Amino acid sequence: MVLIHELNLLQGGVCDVADRRKMAKCVTYYFCVQLCMIHSLGIKKIWLQFCFSAMEARRQSTNRSGWPKYQYKTSSDGQMELKMTPNINRPISLYPLTNYTFGTKEPLYERDTTVQARFQRMREEFDNGGQRRSVEGVLIVHEHGLPHVLLLQLGSTFFKLPGGELQNGEDEIDGLKRLMTETLGRQDGVQPDWVIEDCIGNWWRPNFEPPLYPYIPAHITRPKEHKKLFLVQLGEKALFAVPRNYKLVAAPLFELYDNSTGYGPVISSLPQLLSRFNFIYN
Image (cartoon, rainbow, N blue to C red; front, side, top):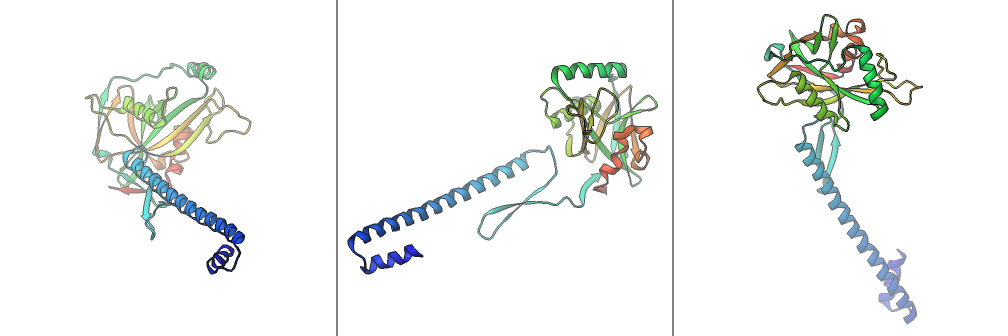
């Protein structure tokens, strides 16, 4: 407001020459500041539009995760705004177990023949490369309108989810796709299209021992293993090849619930982890 008043005085010829020169410099500076602000806002607007365009291109080009979904809307001034879809009524499509075909292939043996050998190898790898990273996939079907989880059964009492150990520096999603292809992939060379969705669980092994926990105990600074569980969205139809030394079983959620004695703490926690999803039975 002061600059505007001085500009009026300058135009009206009320001031002397020295004052006019001083005020002219002030007015020139004022207009320069305004032009810089306008220029800065223009660059900011262009940069925001570029960022939104890049995010949209990344969202369309990647199929690593279907959630969270991003929505874009155009405001009244023409700018794009990012809107996160709230995590409410998260839908997951389930298809009947009879939609899937199961074949067999060569046996797939564990790297370690005993539990002691497994933890000895884990100890050696920890000394050389640090914490072990492992990933497992949760595949869900339905039978008679009830959700079932696909499990690999070895012998009569051991059950596991498809997955395994990641290689050094390997991406979690790429590693899970590789491990699931090794375990359940077809033998005719057709690569399965695994659609990896949410990470639904994190488990840590604090010591070179069997117990796993869904948190890092307070006294542990260097967990020996970090295991992540990912939800895998199955297509309407698929062909799986199961190693001959395993059986692929479909276990209903009600059988897994609170049954760590039969399935272990990780698998028996799946009913709680999956309860936030809205299953759509196709």
